Image (cartoon, rainbow, N blue to C red; front, side, top):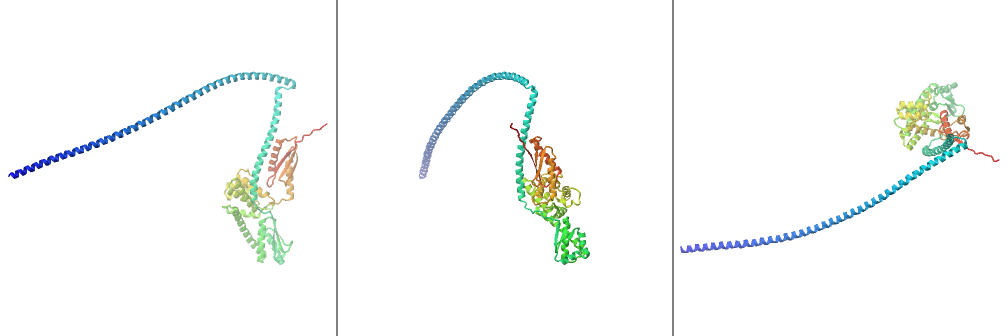
Length: 510
């Protein structure tokens, strides 16, 4: 029991000793941790203090910089304000000086105005005295002298105005002529056509003289039947192995030529056969007419024409005007109208269409009363339904008031095609009559001394009496003669009227 008690005592002492050792160990460890925390806190405090001092230093430096910049900006603003103040002061001083100078000038001008008024009064008094003396010397009042002076000035101004008007007219005319000459030259150079060669007879060759007898028939019945059916004259005996078909109607002449050619090839020639062949020839010619009309429309690029207009266009192949084939002329006018429209920026398609149809009235003018231009306009209005084309067709000969650009283009192209060299034939009697009519028109005006038609009637030169007609009157006379020629004469192309006034100064030495 004593041993156990000792054991428990020893164990108790060991436990108490262990507890004391643990307690002191924990106290020692806690003290070490406390010292470590104190050291760490001290270190952190030192770092924070160092950073605080560093940031405080930077803040002081930044504040110093801001203050220095503010002071510099303030000094610069003060300097600028001082400079502006000096400038304003200088300007104010200059304005004061200018104001004083202006005031001095105004006072000087007032004095000068007073002097001028005094001088005007003196001059007026002197002028009145001189005028009174001039009236006494000349025997004329001031009103009469004024009227005489006005008449002299008016005459001088009228002469000067006449010269100026003539100079401007010549200058404008030259510019217009140059422009028109360029356009027309460009257009004409692009037009290559044949010289007119249409006649009123056609020739059909015969294979033998025996065929000539068969054509004549017993007592001439065959040739009479052929002439009656076709409406032409047949001339057989003038030349060997040929038959001449004579007629002013080209369409009839073509029907007779086709019929006669078919009869010669067939060999059966008698009145009944002749009527049959002539009817067939008329059908062939009608087909040819339509083909020619379609080819003409294709050549100029005109599409959508009515079939009746195509037929009438083809008939123009067998129509001539002054020896010029009308279909060929229409094709020329269509091409020229397109070229002119292209040069001036107009509608090319519309110009070609109007140019191609401008003489369509000649296909029926022997059947319908009236000028071919108005007939053609009615046909176009009826079949083509184009107001612009109908208007241009009606205007191309000046029989209607020309207002449209296409009308002017077609009229110009028609004049070019009809007046070019070799386009038309004209008899000597007609030529001489036209020349005489031109000269008579010019001589019918008062003040004309002599008139000469030159350049095949393309120009009229008029000599006037200078004592009756002045320069301005010469220009008026040229316009009046042009208007009378346009109203009374028929002519292809255009006619130039030149009025010449000669001024002579004559004196004699005695």
